[in-house]
Amino acid sequence: MILGLAGLIVMADNWVVSPILPSIASAFGVPVASTGVLIAAYMLPFGLFQLAYGPLADRYGKFRTVVATLTLFAGVTALGALMPSVQGLTAVRGLTGVFAAATMPVSLALLGDSVPMVDRQKAIGTFMGIAFLGQGISMILGGVIAFALGWRWVFGLYGLIAAVIAVALWSRMGRFPSVPAASGPILAPYRTLLGRWRSARVYAVALVEGMLILGLFSFLGALLSARHGLNALQVGAAMTAFGVAAVVFGRLSGKLADRVGRVNLIAGALAIAGVSGVALAWVPFLPIEVVAIFGLGAGFMLAHSSILTIATELAARHRGVAMSLVAFAFMGGGSVGTMLAGRVIDGWGFETYLLGWGLALILVGFAARFIMSGAGVGDATEAMRPPVPATVAVGEE
Image 1 (tube, rainbow, N blue to C red):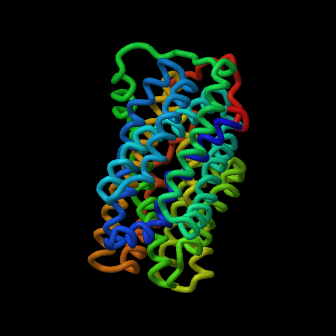
Image 2 (image 1 turned 180 degrees about the vertical axis):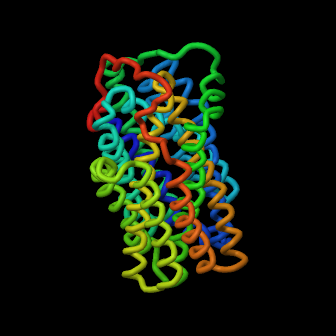
């Protein structure tokens, strides 16, 4: 359960900036669109440094890697509360992304090591659901804190919560010994994975998924505020629909994948997310917008849990690297998508941005059906490594 809480606080911090962007922009006297750099500043190192944590976790222990980085994450998150300018806050958010980068991919690699394939997507979906419960809670909690106390308290309190979880993880270090396994040149697994079409296409789809879904999500708080005059609390409540959908469909993703196939589920889920984006562009009616945000969360979770499950079998002896690459592709794409979205909003407005991103997601969904064809887990490139001595349960580590 403690490892799940680590994922929860990292994802809570990851997504909390979006609903409080209007408050931050108002405090510093800058346009909302220009504060989108805070999201991009976090996403880019969050994705980039996962490339470093993958081989470190494979060599020196996955649990140890999570504990050390979460401790540093807690400190720099709290530091954000003290920043006097957008530039300073941007720098701190970038550093926060550096240390947050380890938790999700390394935890997913642990699940890949210990959970049989027949149960793996359910386990991954459950873990992701716990983590995105943090995102869901963060939408409303961040809004409440910003509304009642100010946006600076959001970073201070999140840092404190992360510190408590880090202490709990340190106390369990002996229960979850690290299991070094990988050897050889550090860059060799990267060359192998990127040089194979079977794995390269998975990373390509993850990159475009991140570019479009995270790019679509990042400015929804600003959209709701501009359209309906909502405050930070109301924006957070509306955007919680995304997190609720992630929790619900994370639990259901395994059964749905077994029924329709993972590749078909990816294609259909991306199309659902795209339709949700189009609905947000065309129907400026708050109840419908909340339903569309729910649809965006459902589409994201169904597609992403399927992509992650496939990725766990791309390199069984180097799962840390394999999962780091897919996370890097997703978050790097999200960083680019967010920056592009800010430019589109500045030039053409929210509706053009939502319509363009939504239609692109629908097209990518159809394309993914053909690009990912044959990317099931039955033709894994490496044999499964024997399970580690300590079973890693979703609710335990």
